[in-house]
Length: 632
Image 1 (cartoon, rainbow, N blue to C red):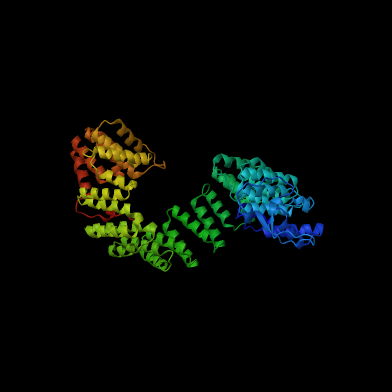
Image 2 (image 1 turned 30 degrees about the vertical axis):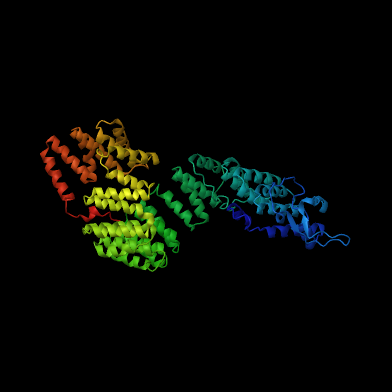
């Protein structure tokens, strides 16, 4: 059973716990015991006999091999009357049966042939030889090597069939039961898996099934139900592995009352095993109050004070309950216990930021600055902390120091926003140019951001020229193409804009942003365009729980439809589209369309109230930091 875990984790073929050398030594030892052969004779015969199995006719692959690959250097001592040449042509030697009698035990020569075949990437031949030899007497080690090669080179179904056949021939070999059970689960043969597991449990109710269950959890609901059906008849009262598997499946099928029975059985055997504890917590969350779950987790953590996983689980649970202060206090305790754990320190710093404990956040982040692996993240969040405290110069200092590729773009984006708040357009563009030089991978992003700055400065033509030059350098970049599209006028540039949008939709037919832009183009040139209305309407009909749903895109589609309704003087339709969204998430575009709709209806009271709200929120020349900068 020692070999079981390594077998199903499939390590490299020539680097297994049961190495070729160990296997050959084992077989040589057995041959010596039975036939009184000496090791020197075995080596002699090995190096001068043909490298092929005597008891199986497996044609070797026809290959154009070099002479060195088809000959072996002879180490045998020739007889007095005859000397063999130093180099022996293997193909011309007599069959192995002449050199040794047919054995009931595995043939050393056949196993060497199999290993040579495996080494030469002739895996089919190697597997076939090993399988054939595994059915001989006392061939357990050969069987395990054959099964390992089969798993690496054949389908799970083929491996299962081989293991099942071998196990039937060797019914008392208990490890084979485990192999068959594991492979049956992997092959989704839950009937066979259930029968084999039941046999194992009858033999040993407390058998460790953890190795069997590695990597077999089904992905589809149908397979999960089949697996659960196969496991249900099995008595798992004394088997923690089986109990927890049942509990997990029942939890997924929303049967927590039954699942809790099985997880309690598992915990009775291993009360402090953290994965069992957290699974029970998951199940309890469906059947008891949040306070009860929190108390259970707290007690479990106190029994296992050195378990980082339990700390993190409880902290995340408190955050899910919106109990940020309690989570923060527990994080500080975890930080004290795990002083050298950077993950805990970072999480404590982030929660400190969320609850506006900036002093604590800065202290924790300055600890992380000393760790090279966390340096950039520490600088990034120190910049966020300074930003939230409206210390913009300090924020720029930290954010400009970020050099980690997955953070640098967002860091510089914030720096650009700070420069624009100070009306320092040159500094903003200089930041983008430096980023473009230091990180060429972000060049398209920087061109788009720079074009947006130029557009905000009423330099649309210059912005368009910039994007055109960038598109020549990066002709297949969709971001640049779409940025150009958005700068083109819907009417005067209709042909060019339509051509570009058709090209973009051909590149990505499922992109909703391209579809909405195309709808806007069509409606701008033909108010009653059925295709344009259909595209925009389809976007606002996407449900919030649909993976395609995007709140900003949804609002943009509403604005497109409202703008079209306004052009048709259908003022009530504009209000129906936008009043509720504006109340929830006001934007300048939505507010402007609503204002014009109320003006069209002659509703002076609504016009005055909405105009005052727009002036307060979006007055020109007034910098509202919370609207201009997207905070972390």
